[in-house]
Every structure is written in structure tokens, then in C-alpha cells.
Amino acid sequence: MDQDMSKIEFLRFNQVNPSELMGIVNQDSLRKHLIDHPHFDETSLQTWMDEKITTDAMHGCRIRAVYIGGVLAGWCGIQPDGNGYELAIVISQKFWGVGISIFKSLMCWAKELGHKEIRFHLLDSRPEYKALNKMSTKVHKTELSGRCFTTYYVTVGQ
Image (cartoon, rainbow, N blue to C red; front, side, top):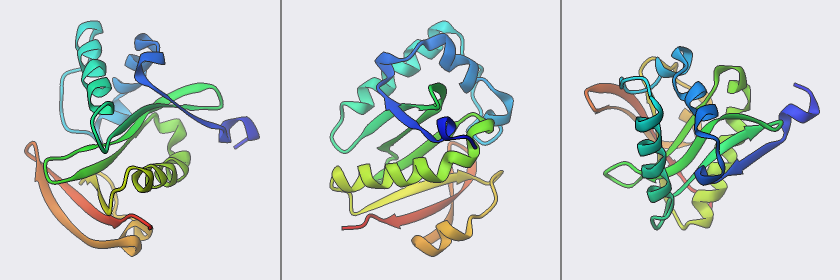
């Protein structure tokens, strides 16, 4: 990866061109690792983005678009999951190697936001990650929206 590709920037959703984001969130290689939902169109994407902007304003949450080397790569954030807070990293496949750096940024955000523990739900289409297993206090299978996930419970460093 060249030096420019390693530069990660996080922007608020109101700073993002929706048509650029639609090209990413509708990628089949990315969608196969997410809960099934219809492809986005202009209206549904704007509704979804507005929901993420609302979530971003909530206590304990932070949602951002991810730019890598000046290119929109996807989005990430800390958001409620019904039982606490979860990490989300949704980036285009060509940027998957940068996921660990994004994860580390999210863990710093979790500490800034005062979280003690955070969850990371990975759809069962994803392999188990040894590094996540090591840093998690517990790992188990969960069902969300009718799909099976591996849920990692990660203690936030104090």
C-alpha cells in the first residue's frame, strides 16, 4: 500500500456525496457480509444517511464516512445495538486491509465516549479472527434480524 493509501480520514455524513456512497453500499462483495436488505436508491439512501446522522448525534455514538487516500471507502461507527453499543466497519473490499487501522480508531473513540465494553458483530459469512478472540472477554453466536453472527465483547482500554 502506498503512503497515500494509508491516510485515513473520517468525515460526517453531511460532508459526503450520496451518489459516491451508494456505489459502495450497493457493492455485492460488501453486501454478502451484511444483513439482507434491498439495494439502495436515492431516496432510501438519503433516509438511511439521515438515520445515521441522527444516531451520530446520540450520546455514546459516532458515525463517520471513511476516506482512504482521499477516496471514499465506506463508513464506520459506534452505534446502539439494543444491548449496549456496537462497532460497525463497512468498507469496500479493495480497502479491507485497512480495517485494522479503522478498528483501532473506533476503539479510541469508544474510550473517548466513556464505553467500558463494546460489541463487534460479524456475520457468519466472515471467518473467526484470532486477534479478536484474544482481545475479547467473550465470544458467542448471536442472532440479529434472522441472521447468525459471531459477537465479540471487547473491553475498552482505560
